[in-house]
Image (cartoon, rainbow, N blue to C red; front, side, top):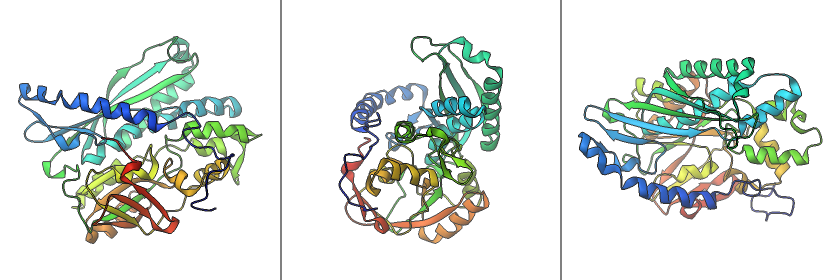
Length: 374
């Protein structure tokens, strides 16, 4: 596949599938600016915000002896795949969907150095009848608890509204909030320590995770067998899409116990590998080793007829989380991740220069203009 080939009429981009970050991101920036003006209210309680956490994946507050970090995340449209696959196979996939939802919040929270402490659930159904399917509902509960146990977090509670007229009948909108502690305070990771010479370690993804599902569903139009299309021996497209998102907090906790404090972390979700440019500093991120692409993402790229630049700008392409550490701790970071059952690679390094991401094996360059989140 040509890396820089122009898009053909048959190319299906993420924006054409219904998700256009060029329209969404300006609202995010506007909201962040309005939110920043409210930070002073913390002073009335004797606390202060960590200003550098504005625009990061989690918000951090200094409460004195430690920091508190918070995040809320929506799962997105992966439930639609689970619903369709249940009709086709009779199987219930909501235990995995629960893990996806918690992972969206937990994997963001840990980027700032936080230990996840409490998870809250938001399950908004299109009507009360969604909860009448006790098998599906119990699967959601069981999966939610199992993911909480995997991350050693307390499930504090939640909200289960029935929103007929807002959420489509028979569907459910899932979200999770997570609160964590950064203790000791030296664990804070908002990029102030990031510098030239740091190594970039990438952790393996399990598949599409929970970003890019709008594109995945749109591609059904090109598959006569739909979700049941076999993409590998014994593996259907639908089953592959529903592989639960990896929970990365066991790795970050194990790193702390091993004496490794990341200089920065990035959760590779929406915007794909462009998320490696999230830090506001002016650095060149040079990638020399690209992890193998999971079969479902390679299948999607080929089916959508996307070149590598388009695919890596949208999907995780086999790497779900990035950890930036001192070069002399890179190999140990990989070993810690593998001991947690998650594959990892020393993928590159940070250099002085203009703000850009160079994925050298693929001839891809992303610049500062390709990711505007502040």
